[in-house]
Length: 162
Ligand SMILES: [Zn+2]
Image 1: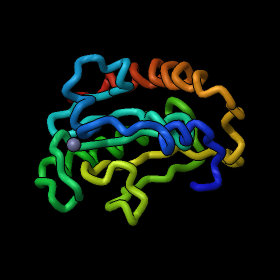
Image 2: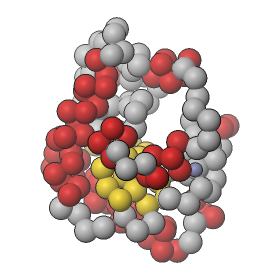
Image 3: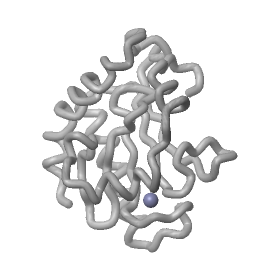
Image 4: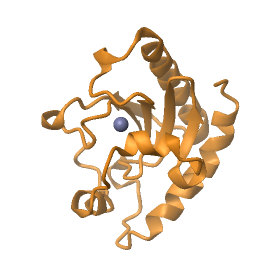
């Protein structure tokens, strides 16, 4: 995935990191649209990655602040994988990807940007998508692109049972 052209990720790499844990803070806030939070389950939630590798790059995270998947209880693991499957189905219906990258980066050494709070990535892929996204030199365009993707995906997630 390193080959994808995602200049706005520099804003993340170079930007100030917020204090505390962003994956704890987002679901505690009630501004789901501002936070790009798409679905709240009982143990886990689905949120768009603010610094996506591709449009529709989603994260599934437990509410519980824990560093690794095997530290989650059985119910949370079941819900996380159920939401993974549901999210793939939604992305397939909503944005017609040709494939997916799905996975977890556990620990800084494995490339985790947020290594204290486990989360799964779902990245929809298209043939030739290393240049699928328009070249955006002005990072202010990106929030608009994220908001329009959010508005496109939200009706699908609203049909999921929580
Ligand atoms: Zn956390």
